[in-house]
Image (cartoon, rainbow, N blue to C red; front, side, top):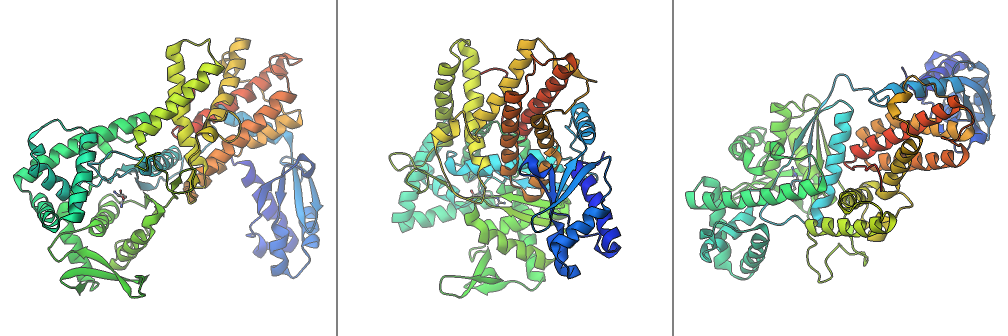
Length: 581
Ligand code: ARG
């Protein structure tokens, strides 16, 4: 069944064609949901755009379109307002039919994209041998939400965790571990490694001879020298163990199956350099092979080189990313490759995207997208640090979230068994951190604020989880199984029911817009508005105490649909719900 917007678009385009000729039928109808029931249900703002093309006043154009608009099945009333807005009122039967089909659909009326596109989503992707910190939060959860939304839409999603397991940090660590005898111990935990890495870093900065030996260890590692390989493997195993633990606390869908480490591309690097050389794009810079991408300059205003191969033969971050693009596009046949990485790396992405294009790897129209995001700030509006000024560990943030949520739950629902309270605290605490992040426009920085993210009012996870719980408790109180409502008719009699219905029916469009824009906050805004419409409805319209069985069942069905939409929507953001709290 076409959705309401498509139906309205079709009718408007027919009206435009019959008023002004078919060459104008393609005009964008610019449909918006009405801001108040006084203006009907939808507003079409196409008259302003057509005014230029037609050389007529918008108001006259709007009148002419209105004149030709077919009223009846879909639209019952059209009014021209202001400079030329067309306010449309929908037939309640259409709303009820649409809602009925959403109610009966497992997918809440969201169609599967056909044919599916193959999309690689590169996210999380931390550098190993360090504990995961707050800087890894955004890529991990934004990427996870995007992957879930695309998958729900029916796309063929391939998750890649492009972990940094191959870079210079391993040279420092290897050299330091070998020199201090640590290499012989077999049970270093990730926090030991973190400390050792900090020590190695200090030595690297202050002791040129150490730095030189560390460089050589990288070459050893990359050429397969056994001792270096052995210690490296130990570091990787421990790092991955730690990473998986954090992923599991966060509830993200990454497993070992999704690992595509930098080292995976090792065998492909020389081929990549050859291909770029073959395209005549490589220049020599003091023995290093570099590419100059148009439009990139250093601080002095000179063309900025991108190093493909260093003078000692080593390859760096850009070469690995080029090999990865080639693998994803040529081998995996991806239509779209999405990189969820801090905005501060934007130049890196723009540069190698351009190289990939110029070498001719994107000929089949594969699209490369850098999904950048801003920085998490502390209350002082500087990048978030511990009170002592150190790096904030991700595991600590999640522990604190659960702790804080636990206190809220203990106050709110002391009657629940303590085990259940703990489980709820986990869902609410972790959900609060994730939702707070996802609900912010991802491109912007935000200030990390425990009180705001855990608030039970406002655009927060606890508010939405609580709305879900409220609905579930209506069913418990009425001793109604949602499944018993199947086949019931939904009637929209009150304004608040109608508003709620209109809100519910936006879901497919919202999912589409998140998939196109790769902006999860659009889904958050939708869910928040849905929960708010629900609360208005619930104030105005008695449900269990409705004055007839038919009315009660219709309202219960509406409630159930809201609950399912909230659960599904939060699920797409990687956030769980609970039955009581
Ligand atoms: N490991 C990198 C870092 O921590 C992020 C990798 C992102 N993905 C990519 N294909 N470059 O900065």
